[in-house]
Length: 252
Image (cartoon, rainbow, N blue to C red; front, side, top):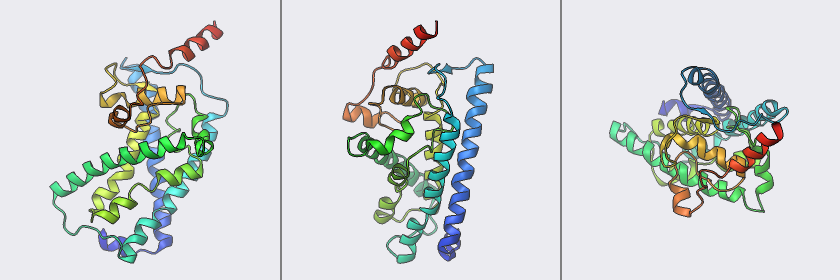
């Protein structure tokens, strides 16, 4: 795998990258729909978080924005490949299973920090306009995950560049980043309460991110709550209750 990547051309890397990101987007989105709109409700497990309807044309808009993000992420694979070609970064040779595991855990933590920092910046007055297309999905869906403005996609898509300059990661650890990132992202945008427990549990990421979209503030973290807890940006559990209550009253 290592030798194959180094021998590829930039065009081949970009083409494979686009197919890869497009494939996992469709796969995780479809599994999300199957679970949250069919299987889990049928089994009476969990429930919908925000009962309000999706915006008009929301799915079409999300898919179009996501297509742009997939193109940016896929073509963007040229940059980590370029670091390897220039000799500025290297891949680990014959890494042990323990090394791969530690590297994946490190990248999960780094991904949380990187996402929080960029997400917080995207809510500042200077960059907010680039984040607004994503927040047009007030009620999220499985297809919201990559619905980014191109600037936001570029900001979030550079997550592995700095780690690659600091350490010789295994190809398996680097390959895991888009997989666990999209998995976590899909859970966060599921608009489905997988299990009714406290906000600190890992499986409440969907609830935390639902509150972020409903309130357009706080809960800037990705899958885990530690960055919001550290930076004191955690939203209360009832943060969206007023908005949903007003909607219910209008519908009566």
